[in-house]
Amino acid sequence: ERGWGLVRLPSSGKGSERGNPKESVPRMLGLAGDPDIVFSLGGPVLFTSPHSLNIWRGGKDGERRRIHKRERYSSELTLKMAAFAQEYLGQPASYIIWNRQNAKKGDPKNLDPNYLTQAQSPFSPWHHALHCFRDRWRNAEG
Image 1 (tube, rainbow, N blue to C red):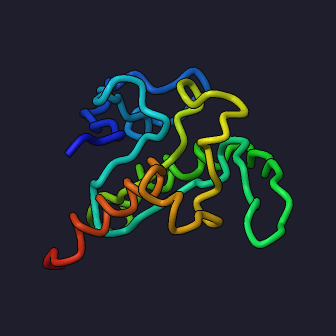
Image 2: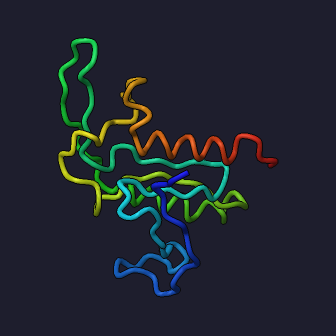
C-alpha cells in the first residue's frame, strides 16, 4: 500500500527560531514523493487540521461549490498538541495535516474531508490517512 504520510524521527535537538522547546520540533523524513498531506500514526489519540489549507467544499445536492478558507495556525496547534501528548497522556499521539508546501493552491482535488461524497472518498489522501489510522489502532491493546 502506498502512503501519503511522513515518518517522525527523533528531534534534532535545536528547537525552532520561534523559541519552541527543542522536544516539540520533530524532524520528518518524507515517503511517497511529494505528499499533499502529512500524517503520523504514533498513538491511539488523533489530532487533525482539515482546514489548514484553502479547500473546496460543496457541489452536491444543488449546493454551490466554494472555497473554505484556511484556518491559520491550525496545523501548528495540531503538531504541538501531538508533540506534548506523550507528556500528558503517557503515549504519543497521531496527527493528520495538509502539507502546505506540496499541496497545489486552488487544486480542485483538495476537498474538505467533512464534505466528501462517497464517490470522492477513494481519491482523497485525507480519507486514506483516516483509514490508515483506523486500521492501525482499531484492535490495538491499550
